[in-house]
Image 1 (tube, rainbow, N blue to C red):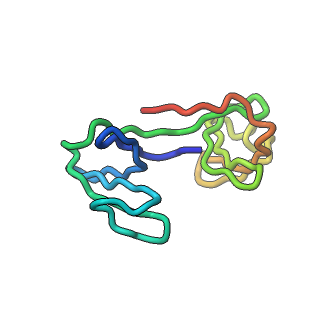
Image 2 (image 1 turned 135 degrees about the vertical axis):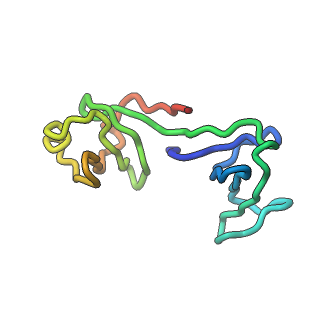
Image 3 (image 1 turned 30 degrees about the vertical axis):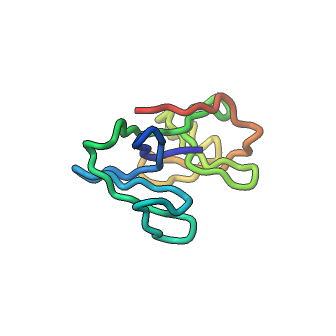
Length: 120
């Protein structure tokens, strides 16, 4: 499940973090010009002019007939955030208030429908 920036650089897509005129790209393995930031995570900073595309990717779904984005996956469960904008519905689904007007919860993965990635 993806929820974050990606960048296409040298015909490959990376997790990314844009920062003005630069983009930090990440990969799980060592590589030329990549520096280890923690075990299994390597970063390289490239000029944004060298990047073919930067996009925000988010995974959406429906659960119990309502719209959500997927934030994470763990052990057969999905961490979801309600995007329907109606507090009474969010509360009726047993979601926790995460911030003002933002409701999240864990949904069994086998109950989630219409999983799809969206790019912006």
